[in-house]
Length: 384
Image (cartoon, rainbow, N blue to C red):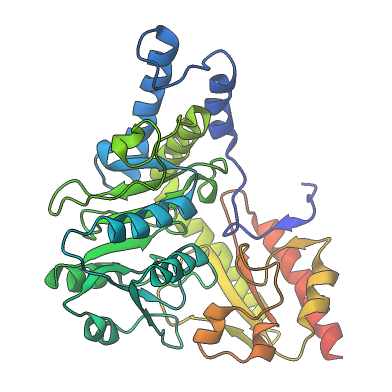
C-alpha cells in the first residue's frame, strides 16, 4: 500500500472525520436544512428529531440522560460554562475553586478570570508521574470550596487521573465536581454515574467528528446542578446556552459517539498495541524517556523525551514525513516550554526535546514503522 505522507500522529490535537460521520451530516447542510427550534412545520420537526437522536447517542457514550446534555461550540465553551456558570450561580456565596496546574488552558484561564472577579482558586501541583496527590486535594478543601475541576486525561501526556476517587472526596465534602474529559470520551470508558461526575466537557473533533461542536453534561439530580448561562438570547438548551443549534454538527457528533460506543473496546486494544510497538522500537535508541509511563495512560498516546538531540531541528527535519507535536495544539504556537512537563519536573532543555505522538482510528502499523525509521535516523544523526 502506498504510504500517504506526512503520517498523521497528532490525534490528540484533532482527529480526521470518520467517513460515516461525514455521510450522516451532509444532508443537514442541504435538503434537511431546518432549524431545530422551528416547531410549526416539517423542516423544523425533521431537524429536531435528528437532534434528539444525536443527543441520545451522545448521552449514551458517557452514561448520561439525554436531557443532561447541553450543546456548545466545543469543549472550551463547555468548560467556561461549567466553571463560570457554577461560580456565578452560587446561593451560598462560596467562592473557592480547586483545580490542577496541568489542566488545559480552557480551565486554567477560566479560573484566572474567576480570580479577577474576586474568587479564590487553589492550583494543586502534580507528582512526577503526572497524577494529582489525593491527600493534597483533600487538604485544600475549605468551608468555602464550591467546585473541584480536574481533567479526566491529560492532552499532552495521556495521564488518566483517579476520577472516581476524586469525585468521592468531592461528594464527602459537598463540593461540585467538574472534569474536562475531552481527551477521554470515545477513547476509554467514561460513565458519569459510575464516576459520580457532576459536570463534564467534551468535543466532537477529538472523536472523529467535526470541529465547532461540543457538549457539557450537567447532572439533573443527586445533586441537581444549576448554572448561570454565559450566552443569552432565546433560552435554548434548557436556558443554559442560547443560540440556534448547529444541526449538521450535532448530528455528526451523535454519529461519532455512536461509532465510538461500538468500536471503543477493540479500538483501544489495537491502538495500545500500536503505541507499545512504537515505544519499544524507539527505546532501542537509548537515552529516551517515556514520560508518565508508571501512571495510567490513554491507550493511544505517548509523550517522549529524547536526550542529546536538537528538538527544533528534529521537528523541521521530520516535518515532511510525520505530523506530530511538541505540546498541546493550543500552546504550540509559543516557544515557552510545556507547563505540564515543567510541573512534572522536566528541565527546560529536556522539554524542548520532548514530543507528543498520538495514534487514531486510521493509524496503521506501516505508518508507525515509517515514523520510527524517520525518527531513528534523525536521532542517530543528531548524536553523531
